[in-house]
Length: 244
Image (cartoon, rainbow, N blue to C red; front, side, top):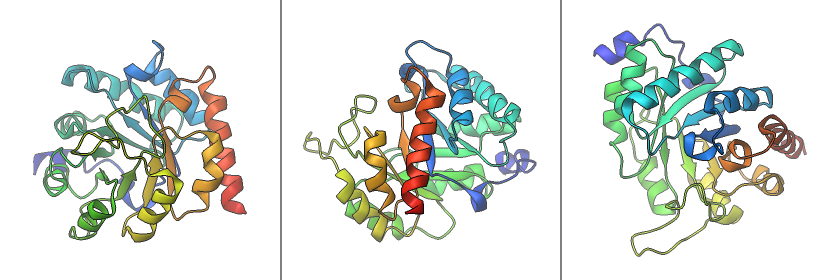
């Protein structure tokens, strides 16, 4: 398949994927500041995975942002260690990879393209994450054939202004998982779980005591006055709690 063939020169991060410190970022979250610059600050603070989530941007704008972020990751010397994925837009990921922009994969939700087709389109080297916020959804994810996805995104831990639709079910009600819910999902999931949704430094010690593989944040870093310091505090709290 062309997309897979064109991206064979990218080193796959699937076997070394680190989702312990996961930044989700887009133009909507940076208070008007440059997205790539904040990613650079977050990398200095220890972020291990980056997701571009640009809900109100068209394909060409997302490609341009992706190129800037990939360049920042490369200049930091972390292209072979920090995975860079794009939210939802499998088409844009495929285009970027064909253009030689090092986008490692995609993160999709339950109502986006089926992950089995994401894998067919993007090939065996791509990282694919899937959201699953309930026991039932995790059970369904567990039934996927091996090799389709690489991790599960679970949340919200708290109501989140950055992702107001996260945790809203078919009846229109908001259901938050809290740390106890994350612990349960991480326990039953076949795949590593990264947890987020309103997460702050205060949540990290409790999350670190679950089987979750890591945390994800948006505003806690992208909206912080000092993104590097914010990232450092989150990473330090996680590492310290995990050592205990």
